Image 1 (cartoon, rainbow, N blue to C red):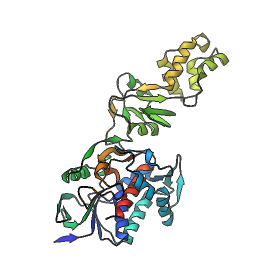
Image 2 (image 1 turned 180 degrees about the horizontal axis):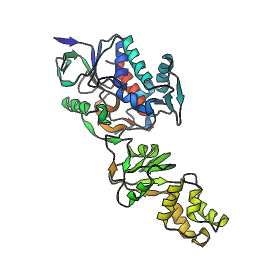
Image 3 (image 1 turned 135 degrees about the horizontal axis):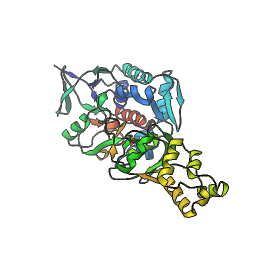
Image 4 (image 1 turned 45 degrees about the vertical axis):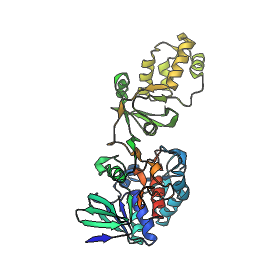
Length: 391
């Protein structure tokens, strides 16, 4: 016996639950299936367990996609203030941390409970621990088979995310189903992920645990936040941001002293000719980092005995120290995925596939990736809301 619904949502994460709640509250009979044992597993570990649930500075230009304009429609119709109103309606206390990032005062579980409560308002049927065995389409209906039976609906929503953090059960199921129904997939790669170093750059591993505020850049992208040296390479918010733009073989440039005015070393030479570069850097950077940079710059004498040309060269290198990462720590450590189901295949208003009516794709499964800091959750809410108005 095949159970019938108006819509079947694959994936009980942020986007899937939002979509299901919206659709069901519009009177649709909605089934949500997920192979995990509980809903919202990625939500629960986000933001150090407090869920960075949105960002007040959300704007289309803070998302990466082959079509940078695609996200504009959904984000304009369901923005940070809309989700914040929902958070407050559920009595969840929150705070702004930095750079517009909003977190729960309590636990990320409050966001999962919010979504489940919204689903309950529309009597959504939620079934976890269900492995998808097959999906087919005939006579205007999609049929999904799991070990516990079959369900069919005229609308199918792919909300299973990307392959980032496989320990939570992440897979490429959405991509497989998209290809099955003739949709193109932009090559997925890890994003918001630490970068690895080797060769000469690997000498910086001795600084594992040292963090400092920098401007890190790759190509035209640049971010001012903390960078962290690790035993494998580089991490911290600035590096995670850059990683979404970085491709193998490219360099990452780091400005270790973003507040330093041009000519600051020459000024230091005039003011303190008997001091060393190492001593000056120790006053500006963590000691271990200052010592390592001074050693690599090779200026061991006092500033008064160092040529202006050498000091200018040191300034320039400190303002644009280049690293050539050998790779990243991969999907295992990536917070999200760059790439995914091509936006060229989807309606930006409804998230419906153009060539397969009734098929919708939302959240991380789509080729839309936000900056670090709550942007990807806002895309989940906005894309889920958009599809939820259409299913």
